[in-house]
Every structure is written in structure tokens, then in C-alpha cells.
Image 1 (cartoon, rainbow, N blue to C red):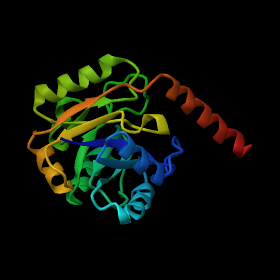
Image 2 (image 1 turned 90 degrees about the horizontal axis):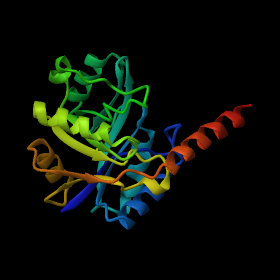
Image 3 (image 1 turned 60 degrees about the horizontal axis):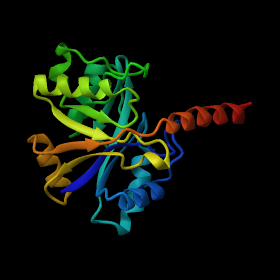
Length: 219
């Protein structure tokens, strides 16, 4: 089965320092055959990663974006353009109009202030729930997400949410196939499997250090 890390950031997210070339190298080293790049409110990482893939046509690449809406963060998968709004229903509609799917990441991670608190009325706008995120410190966050997805029959995804090198490939979506078309078909038919492991706590210390360095550079 092929594996796709369905949530990864590049240096074009302020919280990350990952070069696109390094992400590709680490994915292959970890036995990951595909990745979704979804930087915060920008597709710069997606465009940069596409250039890196010029000689790696067998690697599965899903373009994406992580958008901060008025309700919290959501992922737009298969998106290669900037979005024009931050109002959740309109964001979801725009993602779908552009041929993408709407994914709610880490919905029950109480430590994240920008999480999307998904409720039953949101279901018409949502395609999938991220049921395993390697950056969730508390295991119950992922368990609650899985329970919600199962209860309402939503598609399930998993991703490392990598910001730094040790995190890449820590979580993935497995499927039978080898192409991006086969992957999307399997995902939308519910024929995939989510797997992964939580990142070590040290990555959160890296995040704090990264933020402090950015602040000091501006002083």
C-alpha cells in the first residue's frame, strides 16, 4: 500500500523551516510515497514543491492550503490558487468550486487556539476529518476526531502536520494504488486507512524556539 502524509508545511508557513527539497528527501527516506503541502494562507509552498518534483514524477503530490477562517483553520486539498475569503461557508464553497475537498484538521486539540470546533450543522460543508494529527499532544484529541468522523460517515485523513524535519512522515493515509487519481478515488470512496504516531514532545520546543528567533530577528 502507498502512503501519503496528508498535512505538511514548508518554510512559507511562518511556523516552519522546511525546504521543499528536504521534505521530498525525508518522505522517501521514511517510506512515504506522497505528501500534501498545505501552508498557512498561501500556496507558495505548493508552487515551490511542484518545481522540485520535475524529476520525481512517480511521487504523489497533493497541492493544498491551510486557511484561517472566522471559525478556525481548515484544509483545502487539491487547491492551487489563493482563496478570496475567510468566512467559513464561503471558503468551503470556494474550495469545492475549485475542485478541492474540505478537511477539518485537529478539531479536538484544545491546546490549539485556532482549531475549528466542528459541529453537526457544519456537516454539509465538510468532506473529511483529520482523525490523526501527529502534533496533537493529548491522544484523546485524535480519538475524538475519529469518533466524530465515524459517527457522521465522513472521510478520514491523517498527517504529520510537520513543521520541522523530525516530523515529516509521522502520519499518513494508506491506499491501494500508485497515482494521485487512484488516491483521490480511494479517499472519496472510504477505501483508505489512517496510520501514524505522535511526534516527540521536543518538536513543540522547536516551535517555541522558532517563534522566539523570528521575534528577535525583527527587533
